[in-house]
Image 1 (tube, one colour):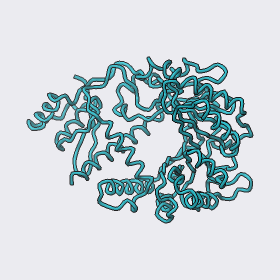
Image 2 (cartoon, helix red, strand yellow):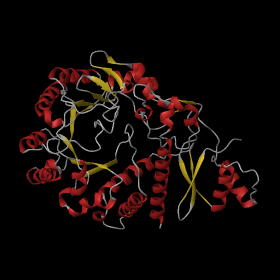
Image 3 (cartoon, helix red, strand yellow):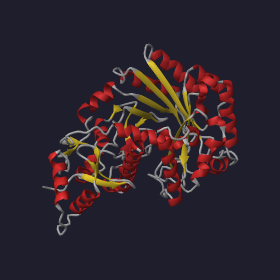
Length: 468
């Protein structure tokens, strides 16, 4: 019998193992934990007492500690990929411009930080390209009930007239179907006339904001004179909540968090300013996948973040009031709880399976100003490995297959990886600027292990608190 496909984890209160095949967290006694640790280390010199042996045998009899590994790495959507791309494109994101009125210090389009990515330019999408993109979406979403169209940049509101034209045309083309429009903006151009239009067309708006004024203004500056943008964004948010309270409920805040900043200072804005009450907050660390310098999380930052996660757990259980909890961590906890609900016990992994990070390419279709298809707005636009077609020729099915099945690049590793069900690596983590690299993909695996370990511990913490 081979080594059990498990991962050991413990909390201050108890000991557990994660059964990969059954996708289940199992509580065990300390003596069993130590015995399993010795087994995984293949320590043949350690012997176990009768009680421990009996406990391990009982686990095996009940279907745990299996050494089963999947036989092949293949994304489950592989046989249906052609159908998805022909009939079930779920969302289209239009890059209406590559221009921006900001020059953020961490921007992925910065010439100094991301050498392989495109840089800021004056390129913008023509009406002809936008119209063809909407037509393409219509033709490839016939089996989708809900149409989703997003506007992206650069700063998309620099092309507000084009956006209005696209919406009018899409309303006509998709007549009879529900359409959800969304836009990601830096928030500086949300004038009354713009907001009135967005509100009247029920468009969801995500505004980029990076924390308190001193932090935000350090990173998010105007291109024209280098001044900070915090005051004008806050003024616009305040104006929207005052004049358009119904529409304000559709506002979201996107925070790019630099872990070199003080976590409390990033977080404090949500406690000091009532303008954020009721707004959805989504936070992500700086994207360093293609960056020249990697993001480093300080011990102090991690400690404060984990404390806030603990408070979020207490709030979720009703032990403390919600207003004492960071909305950043509330969202993170909810994401973890959502994943907890997906921990449904199974017999074992199927013969063919795939790391969970890869999405189905093309179903969230990013269309550049030039009509080139990329996997989404988060990948390197300049890399041909991330481009899966264009408006002229349609989808490149072979390239879509390749990025769908990036797990095959590291098949043996993935077959034996305890975090396979938690993996968040997408094709961009294997993108070696025009080719897919197994070696590059493997360099990101340590981040997956750390993230999966933290998820397991958060799940365990919440369950333990719930049982106190």
